[in-house]
View 1 (cartoon, helix red, strand yellow):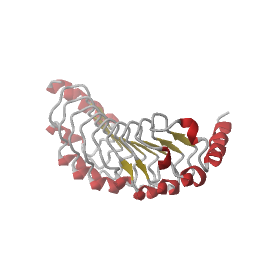
View 2: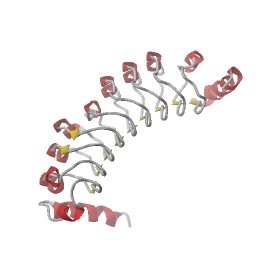
View 3: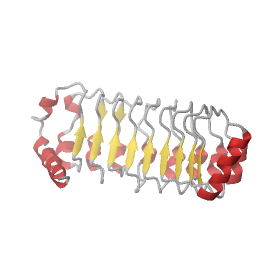
Length: 238
C-alpha cells in the first residue's frame, strides 16, 4: 500500500477510531501510525508479514480490539500488557511459542484467540481475568492442563487439536466454565476425572478424537450428572 493509500485509511480512522490495513504485505509497523495513538479503538493488521510488533504498541491506550491474525509473529512485546482497555485480542495463525506474562494486566479482556500457533504450555497468565469469556487455544502444542487452571473465569475454553494428555481435576473448580473443547488430543479415559463430570459447571464437554471410545465415557462415574447439565442447557435452547 502506498503512502496515499495509507493516508486515506488514516483519515477514515481519525473519524471512526477503526483502522484496518490487512493484506498489505507489511513487514514493519508503519511509523505514521503513531499519529493515531490518542484515537484508535480498533486496529486490524491481519494477513501481513510481521515477525514482531514493536513495544510502541503499548502506547495505544484506547485500543479495545487488536487483530494480528495470519502474520509471522514469533513473540509479542511485554508492552501489550499496557493496553488496559483491550477487550479482544486475536493472534491466530502465527508462530508464537510463548506469551508475555504482562497479559495478566488486561483486566477488561473478554475474548482471546490464539489458535494455530506453537504454544506448548497452558498460559496461566489468563487466570484471574474476571471478564474473560472465551479463550481459544486450539491447534497449538499444549500437553497438559495444570492445576492452576482452577482460577480461569472463561465460559468457553477451546483446546481442540493440541497434544493434551493430562487434565487437572481442578478444572472442575472453574467458576464459570460451561463449554470445554478437547477434541483431537492425547487423553486416555482415566484422564477424565469423575469430579469433572459430577461436580463442575461444564455442560458441553467435547472429547471426540482422543485415545478412548466415547461409548466408554458413558460408563464413567459422574457421567449421569454431566448429562443432566447437558440436557438442561439443550432444553433452554428450544
